[in-house]
Length: 320
Ligand SMILES: [Zn+2]
Image (cartoon, rainbow, N blue to C red; front, side, top):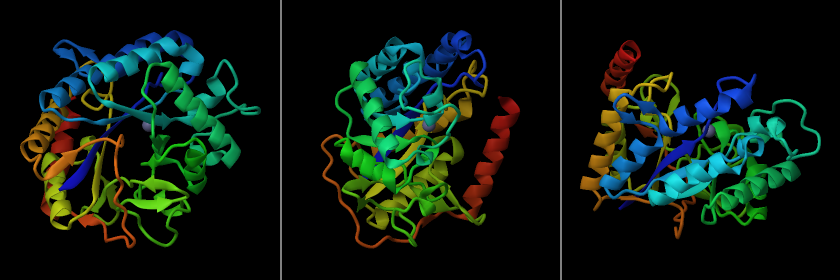
């Protein structure tokens, strides 16, 4: 049995930083609900599909935007997830820190994009503030975290432990993982304990083009994900972490459904539902972690599936 974490980073962007107070209400509707002619393809559709297959995802919710726009919109997001019986966890995009009405930190006058740009004390404060905001918005207590854009470092794990949080899923070997200070000299692909926190790395794989790629719904074909899941099971891996976002079933303008994505998501959920004797789709709540002492090699996916995915992605670009 392989533990599978279907993770969804939930965030709202105003597409730039000018006039954000005027832009926010529309941005909120597009990013959270994603109203289209055929229905709401933001969070509501995602929640419906997960529910119809009896699956629990992990929704890493970004709360810092509420320090600018108030707690009500955040409470609305958390309410949707609570009603959908999904797991709420903490995600932080530090781009919001200098936009806050009440300063979160003493002297932040400009953008610092990644959490790793803040020192340990500042990270402790920001993570604590984020967890408090989610709680105020109606979330059950959180115990897992993901840094925005995976921009974490080893201090982040110390800061999580200081806030009583047990799990992190910010390590991504295709982004900042390798120079994060976690497992220096190695590539983390399986759960590991570091600074008293259990790190659940993003699943990454070789796709035959040179670098590593992470297992993201919008960036991998269904056949790639399916093959990687079976390979992980055969290799007796402990965990498989998939990334998605609240707006990933929509076109870039977020006014139409992206039907390739909608079908891919439906297929993945059907597959995980049908094979639940092999894949345990779950959250971090109540998790007894199984860590490895030695990291295995990243997974590989055959080149023909990469080519098939590239064709599928070009089709999406043309028909969006
Ligand atoms: Zn994010």
